[in-house]
Length: 242
Ligand code: F6R
Image 1 (cartoon, protein in one colour):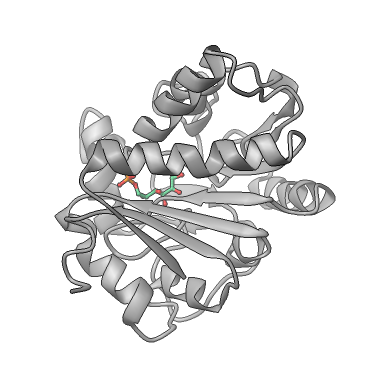
Image 2 (cartoon, protein in one colour; image 1 turned 180 degrees about the vertical axis):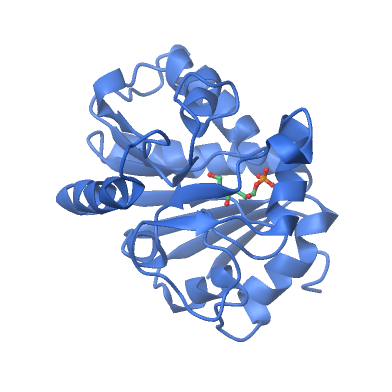
C-alpha cells in the first residue's frame, strides 16, 4: 500500500486528480470505477478543470460507479446518478452512454445486480477504482458484517451510514434504507485502487484499513490483500497512523 500524506482536503483532491488523470493519459480508453460522497467532489472539480483546459480527454473512457440508492431515480437530486452528472459528467467530455451507475429503480433489484456484475466483468473490471471510506470502514456500500459479499448486491444501510448521509436529505427518515452496491469481488478485481479520505472522523477507519486485522467488520481492511492500492489522505485522516 502506498500512502500519500497531504496537508488538507484541497491537496488531497489535487493529488487524487493527478493519479486519475495520469491513468487517462496513459490509457485513454481506460475503465474508471467511480465513487460518490463528499470526499471526491474536489477531485472531480480538479479533473473537470484540467479536462476543460484540454489537458486530456475522457472521450474514450468508460466509467462504472460503485453504488446507487434503491428506490431513487437517476433524476432524484440525492441519487448517485444525479450526483455524478452534477459533479463530474456534465462538466467533462465523457460520452453519456459510456457512464454506468446501477439503476435504483429496477423492478427486480437482484437481477439488476447480476446485470451490473456482468457489465463490469465484460469491461475486464476497472483499470482504476476510486473509493471513499465510510466512518465504519465501508467501501461502496459494503457495510461491516460477518462476511464479505463478492458480487453486486442489495444491502441494508447501517444506522451509522444513514445518519452520516442524513445531511443530504431533509431528515434521516428520508434517507433510503437500502442500496445496490458493487461487491468486494468487483472492487478487488480492479487493476489499481485509489482510496481517498479526509478529516479526523475517518482516522479510525484509516487506521483499521491499514493496520487492523483483515475482517468484514472493517470491509476496507481487505484492501491489504490487493497488490496495487494507493491511499491519498489528508493529515487529519492519517492522525491515528503515527
Ligand atoms: C459512495 C460510496 C461510499 C462513500 C463513503 C464516504 O459511492 O461508495 O462508500 O465513499 O460513504 O462518504 P463521504 O465521502 O461522504 O465521507
